Image 1 (cartoon, rainbow, N blue to C red):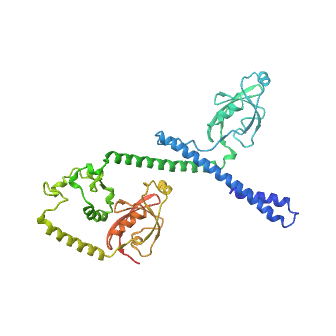
Image 2 (tube, one colour; image 1 turned 90 degrees about the horizontal axis):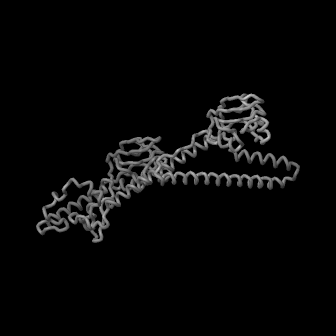
Image 3 (spheres, rainbow, N blue to C red; image 1 turned 30 degrees about the horizontal axis):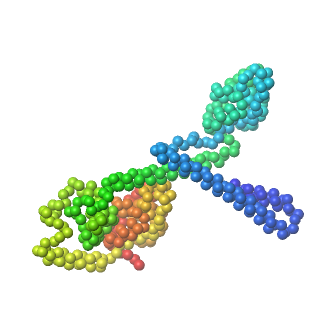
Length: 407
């Protein structure tokens, strides 16, 4: 708005000064105005970038020191006393028999000091601190904020007096509250991002501590070759799990449960599900026929699954930026935006809306569009599931009954 007003003012000045010139000069005037506005815009952009960079540097420094909260300065902008001061000479101080003080040259009409101080008063002290010169005055006023009470001591003629003045906002800082709110909001978002980064790093450190250098050093009883691992893959994916998140491949090419999965099942003896002393990688001769029968059943199930109708939710997803996730306090990679809800779709019937942030399906965190695709690949028409969304800053869980895909 300020730049727009500036452009109008410049246009008025230039056009008024050249009103008598030929029409051809109009384009030159226009060009000159646009060049000036462009300079001001660039200067404003550079100022904002420097301010943002400063805030980020401050928050990063606090984060590295382990400080979790930022000591945000008291809001309100600069404090305003409403006087025009001037320093006293040594000779004037000797005549007045004072060691410190500054002269009040002018009192701003309607300002905080109006009605308390007068022109030619000598301001001796502020909040009990002697005012020796203008630098001292600035030092005392620097930490003050609008609304603060300031005790003053002054000399008027031969009479000393004391009073209290309530400071006001500096006239030049009328837009300061909005700027401070924007800065504090930016600080809060940066802080949340850094805290989330810190949590993720600690989580990764814990995984690294538990993770062996080579999975093949673990228990060989549960070692799976690629064929066996491919058989259990669809079972995990059916529950929205990524097999690679729970199994690791060793140097010998075998897949074994990782530390997280072993921790999950440490209270269970999975060997009870196998015959004692039998290597699950080897099958005895008498069970070959049984194994063939199982494969036939698996193929039947696969054909049955292929013939099943794919599920349809009926939303158009959109990716979230890291900035959006930081604002919503979501983990990195979690959630997607609902850009559109198809009319008559299961999503519309369940109450999902455009602008919702879909974060979970059946209680499991949804990691972007890829996570939604994986879920829908294993889902079937008629299946009921719970969709958790963030709406107006709050989580809301809705029950959705998936339908047959509509092409």
